[in-house]
Length: 229
Image 1 (tube, rainbow, N blue to C red):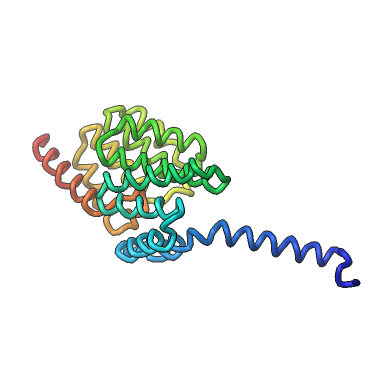
Image 2: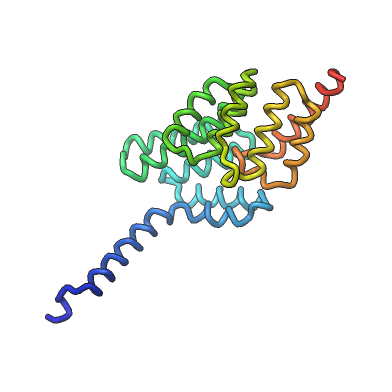
């Protein structure tokens, strides 16, 4: 019976077990993302881990999140949008705290899909909703900046760019946003310069960029620069 007596040590041990169990249950579905993040210099491996998440978590919303990310990085935007829709439906049918948080990231993926599809107003609207809910998600702010730039709203893009904190934002996000702003201003040479600096960085971790998107911009802006010159 003495073993059943409550004391400070037993209470703390019990609390530690409960917290550890909750932590594992919360983070276990994201294990493939965590592993994939270790291969930032090797996007092919990151893509394989995202695909592994989809296979292992197929019936869970996190599977749809990672599959949609995989498809965005592959340039399959229609398929990515379908995955987001499936993920949102799963979250709606089971409104847990976990799914309330998941909705946030699914909508972020949706904003990037809209941006790369050229639906800049839709991208702006969704990204604003995401950033208002979590102003630490700087990639959502990146979507806002770049969408403003693509719409020709240079002043709005620059004002949003000023909201990026100096120390907590990866350099590749800054470079991509600056490239879009300079292109919107008509300084295509400088925009291409920023993209060349971006190459070699872990740019695929920024707004789910892929190599094709970078090369497409370099080609378009290089031609535009020659015409301006």
